Length: 134
Image (cartoon, rainbow, N blue to C red; front, side, top):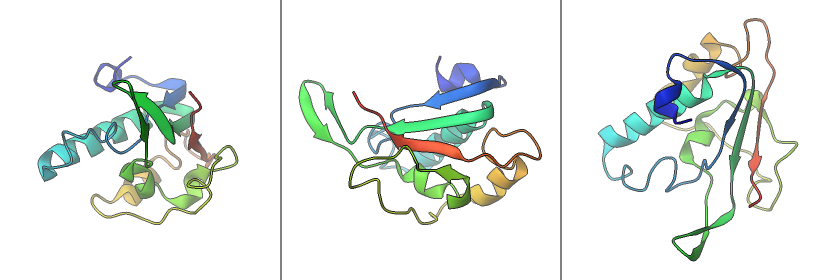
């Protein structure tokens, strides 16, 4: 299901995959502030579809168009407050550091409205985040 098709819907568990620079946000959108903000809004929609559990993954490397590509995690992941992240499933050297708060829209206030992203009121269950393998 696409993020656009999920607008207005909620699910008990949501997997957001491919959270890598160049994929999400799209490499085509990073040259324009307006397009980057639209990607950020789509990310927020994707995150808030989860009622109780959200799993976010990214690949440290993947084949794109027949070429092996090394990836950096999406800049949007840096905007999720650390208190909502569970990195117990994160592996690899690049994933072992901590993320710092990012700029742009105030994600903290957006996430605080729903406690943890996708968590029901009163629950502060963290988001699982880590690389996907494959």
